Amino acid sequence: MSPRTKEQNEEIRLLRVKQIMQAAAEVYLEQGITMEMRDVATKANLGYGTVYHYYKNKHALLDDMLWQAFHDARQTTEEAFGAPRPPEQQLRRYGTLLLRQWFRDLSVYILYKMIWENFQQVPGGRFQKLYDQFQTELYRPLVSAIQQLGAREPEKRANLLLGSMIGCAGLWIHHGHEEPDTDEIADSLVRSIEKEGTLTP
Image (tube, rainbow, N blue to C red; front, top):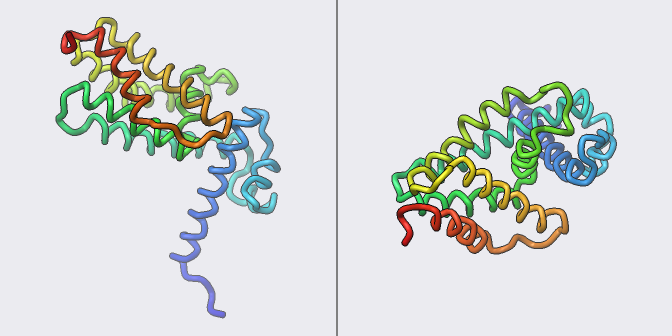
């Protein structure tokens, strides 16, 4: 058998990292910051040593998972708000896309949930840079779209929208239900914001 090529080794590495991060997200939802690397290895169906080969401890794993979630969420935010559409259409698209992403990639849901909880479980301002970039690149575009609607207190409306989405998604995620109708959820939540705006009678 010929040795693997550099490209094959990199492909295996990326698959292993993805496998570990997916398992870590599931374990984190079950255990929070008390999660153990051994539980991640079990969930990923990998050897304990294999997980430690990629991550020296759970904090390094959590760092990688959250930053990857941030980059994925940024793509979704850009997709929702990047095209020139009326703000109400942008907000509905944003709500639908983000909810779908949360149900299919638990690490992105965890990112939003941890931001909303102000990283209560993580000591020492470990994620200050992540928090700052979240505010600039993921939160401000949402506030801007709500401002364009003419809604009063756009930051308050943005907080209510995200908080409602996090709570709503959590009902399905934590109880293991199938993905709900994300379009319907997003439409209901955005309609409550539109009522506060000048664009809706």
